[in-house]
Image 1: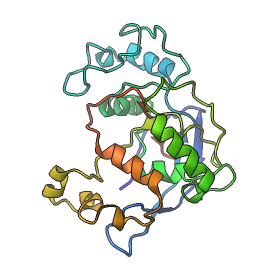
Image 2: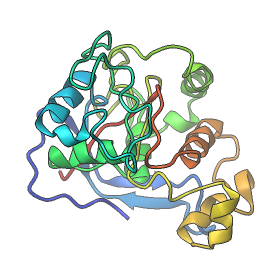
Image 3: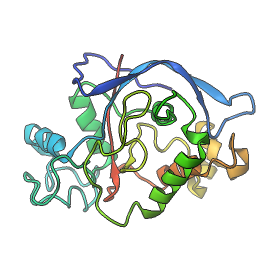
Image 4: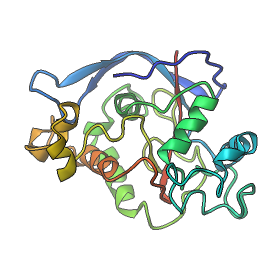
Length: 246
């Protein structure tokens, strides 16, 4: 399923991700190893602290202390100096400590939506010079796995610090983890195994052995991380970016 967007007014800071096939990490069946991802636009970088501050200034119901407890946990925007000031947080750093609900509200306010997992993975599979191949590139895999092992050690730096990939997007890998619209559609938990929903069965039963590439540990880490989240969760290394209609 892909997000549909209407009444869009996306900013200049987006790149076009052309339509193309995407190799599914956990297929529902041996025949579903690839899915077609329609063209969409994606933010060049993760949303920054300054951008999110501008949003909560316009929408005070999403400030820290005002956002409903059902939608955000106690750590929501805890790295800011106050509900309406950044304090020591870098203006051009990726906003973190933000829940799925808050991230989605931001994207909708911009006329967009959080990218689906297929959209995000399609964009992230681009190398510096080609539209696909990052998942099978040994050097890229080594760098990503090294970052995944260290991602909670320190606050992230500024956005745009990594070279743009083939599509022109920065920081999809190596700066912060990122929310996706359907982050909870593929889960490892026992609770979801008991639910029996077909879409959620991709991670269940056969586990990693059912992956299209059992050596693709970086993708497994991303899907496992997403499976640990709930929509109200916030962490110091989880941010987001928005997607838009082309």
